[in-house]
Structure formats: C-alpha cells, structure tokens
Image (cartoon, rainbow, N blue to C red; front, side, top):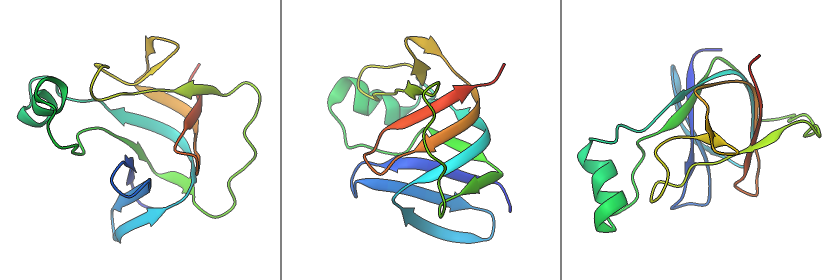
Amino acid sequence: MGKRRFHKNLNLGCWTMKGGDCATTHIKQAYLENVTIHQPNLNSKAVRSVRFEGGYRSVFTWFWSTSYTVESVPALPSEAKRVRYNPRKDDHFHIEGKRVDTLSKVWLLESGECFAIEKV
C-alpha cells in the first residue's frame, strides 16, 4: 500500500481517498493507522475565503496514511474520541479542544464523523 490522502467530501457527503497509484475514489468509511494530519494554512487564499468571506468549500486539510482499509472497518472502541475540524471556525483538527497532528488509529465513519485514538 502506498501513501494515501483521505478527506471528507462535503459536496458529495462521503470520504475521498487519493494518492499513490490509485485514482480518486469516493468511499463510505475507512480505518487508518499511523496518521499524520495536514493542517490548514491559515494564510492561504482558500482558507481565508472560506473562513471570512463565506467562500466555496475547498480541500485544504486531510489525513495521510500508508496503513488503511476501506473494506472491513473494525468496530469503534469505547476509548476512541471524536476528532473535529470546522473550516469556518477552527484553526486545526482537535480532540476536545486540543490540537492533534498525529493519530495512532482513525475511524472515518459513514455518518461523516471521525473518531481516533491518539498516539502516546
């Protein structure tokens, strides 16, 4: 498996997987391990447009992973916490207000929610 990029596709209501030798693929759910988060560049024109001018949603943040599955997603454990990012309000991805840049395990759910276990 090569490195893949995952982001919530707000226009289609699903998750999108891109990168490596795979074409852009729209998926319902995924399970990722050893995740690095590409945080938004708050000085970029796209981010400023969405945040301050009500601009069109664009992709400026995502999850990177080389270990993932989109088929047999394991059950969500009770210790997983909700990961949040609202491009109109938040400066970065966070869990309970604390910025997160790397995660041990991530569940991208069909509901559009994202849960994770932080790296220790």
